[in-house]
Image 1 (tube, helix red, strand yellow):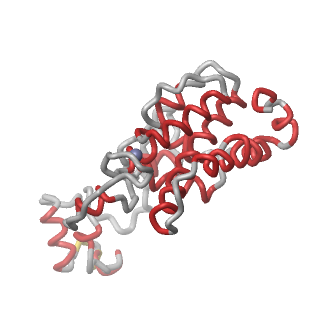
Image 2 (image 1 turned 180 degrees about the horizontal axis):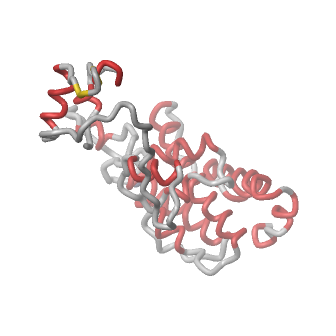
Length: 241
Ligand SMILES: [Zn+2]
């Protein structure tokens, strides 16, 4: 009947209270729910008969708890970056921060202004653009320098404007390289965000060298390779030194 939790609020009647002397006897709150669901008349009640389980098979002809859950669960809009963020080659804490970025959960000047706070905005990395997350992660010259450096290490073109375009650059490459590049993308996004916070809140000067130390050759490849399968994976990363 597709009843919501709000509709069912306060309905605590047990079956024994609803069936009295072999017939339906609806409490007021249950009758209101039935009226709301446009159920004019219930089928006859046979309390002496055994209950029958009614199940509808799934597309493969079987019924399972998983198929039932799949039917009733609330489905969100599909995104193209879920397997990029949530995979075994990336540390969970890094994934969590990247997930916030993909959901635009970042206190940039633009998001603060959208909440009604008037402030002048300028990119912390020295360019003249206003600060928003896309600019910090992808379009600022500071970020572009880091992405170019990353792409060169992997022998890729650096003409990408977002994470999905960057990810597509390793299409056709080996699974290991694809996983390492995925980890590199996510880690670099997080590092660029942390670098922005360091400049804004700790009054540090923008420093590309610091970001490079934290990205592929350092944290991503080393850490990612161990998460991908230990020293063999690390040893096979010859293109990265
Ligand atoms: Zn900038």
